[in-house]
Image (cartoon, rainbow, N blue to C red):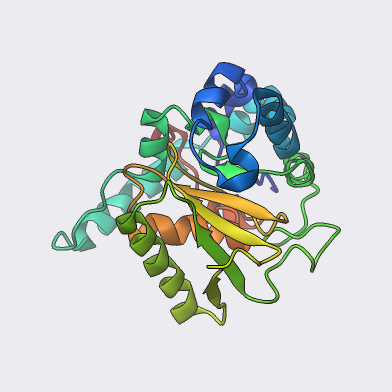
Length: 266
């Protein structure tokens, strides 16, 4: 099946009312680059209208029962999964240092998770439309987002970034360590736009929560590493979204490799 949003499951059902303007105002009370710094509340409304999240949340809420029914497991499958989990736990390396709070946990505490797709993603209207097509079974078979303006929505000339004043020294270093992770594993180059001359760039901000747009959306696009998000793994994760990747659990072929256990879904 092609439920690209099975990631949302029960959590997404809460997003039907996800654009409470009181929360939006608090959510965006810091610096988001020059364009957003001077924004009025009406401009904030337009910013969220651009994301298309409101209509997406309503769509997913309507399909909640359908998704849950699709994910119901038989007793035999559940027993098999329990056995697999026991085998995995027996092989776990407990000497590895555990991560701090997850993105989901951080954003939940900061009350921003409900404002975002999959808890940490901002979507343009076009992206939200493609996600809704996926819910209905029509999503293109790919992991990275590709819209009708491709390849203009990719970072063909490398990825430019700069730091907003809200991002402190430590957060900036964590962000740069995240860029190094991508550079070492791929052919992608990250370049700091110190002179603010790049036509398109990622602007690191330190707002509530950890979140990013998906792919290059044009102009300056914020990527937030707020309190608790200063982890290399989280920075690398959010940069993956900025490069154009949705969560792997949203892949069209997800069910060929994993089984969703609803009891384990928050």
